[in-house]
Length: 316
Length: 228
Image (cartoon, rainbow over all chains, first blue to last red; front, side, top):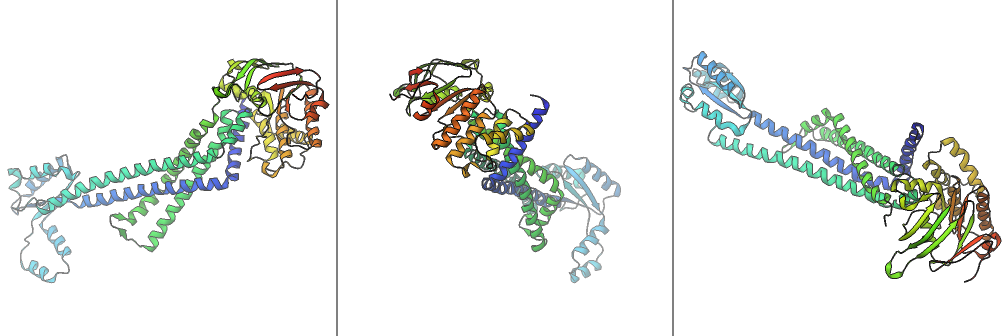
């Protein structure tokens, strides 16, 4: 086949696919409705999952080990301890507050409690200098605990240091455990939704093509080649996918616009709507591209598989 | 041009063969009429020629192509050489009259200019001028039949197979269709026509092959319709 003829054929396939899309409007609407709903659900669960992850991250970030230093600890000892802590593999960062800073923070935190303020003013600063140790992984808290309880290190600290044990430790353990499970559930949900959606879309397109199997068989009898028959169906399904992706993004966008204007910075339990909106806005083009790719991919693959059986020649 | 050698087609063993050791030889440019009652095996015969069905046994050679050696990917090429008017028209429901006829040309990669030039001429031949933009569902049975004929002849095939092309037409239009077939036969196309219509057979005075119970009952030149 010459290049020119190939080009003509390619244009014809595109044209036929577009014309078919317009002429089969009812069927197209049905297929697209299914696609829009499923694409929207998948994207929503993706955003929800990211928002969950963010909430979990924020909780994790707030958790740290407080090391209270005895007033007798020298600056040199303090610096040495900080450096040693920084070298531990699980330590993300270390923050040092001297006695004055701790007092200031305490006063700020209790600004409304007049009696307490007075009491503090009447004494010399009773609060210890503090090192806050932030961790990469809360599950590995024991390593840092062990290090701080070594005799050389322990003697620099007050009797109630390091402060993380008891009830707080249990709470940390619980949160760590819960976040891991939540993260896994989130990922599994997205995957399941994606698979179910693909199957539903595939089925819808297969039905649409089943309705037109006669057309395929007629084209076959007239001597049309496989791709000349299949091409327009693929173009048509790709148009379904493309338009569905656009509609799906529009729906999600308007939901976020509506949510941020009516709900005003509120959150639903662990779902921080503000974060979700920002996340969606920041990744808008990426999501649009992703939706379009997925829509076109599923549409194309489905019609490819669905037309196959009607294109076969009799072998017996 | 067409050669069938002891061709048998059995769909269902218990019911016996639909075609039983048919041997038929059609010369190039010949005009052959196949007659026979419903269920005699005419349509099966045509389905074998278009490779819609495969024979249970026997040999088929058309235009030098041996069907035994035909690969799947070459079937479209074979079908492009044969024009077929199907008994049930087989028009594409989502395409207009013009597009249905043009489709036959698009398949073989004919350019747009030539299509716009050829299709109206052919539609004129079958008396469908002015109905180019109609959809098949908006046409009468006779009109659909003529679209099917236009589509079959637009490629000027070497072989034209017409399965009851006058079945849905009144005598005047039926004769118009036959005249079209005679015309393209004069231009050098081999025509294989199946019909019930005794009038047409008697007027045409051509070679008549009678099929009965899946067998060739008679094969006569310049013949009349015979009641078996």
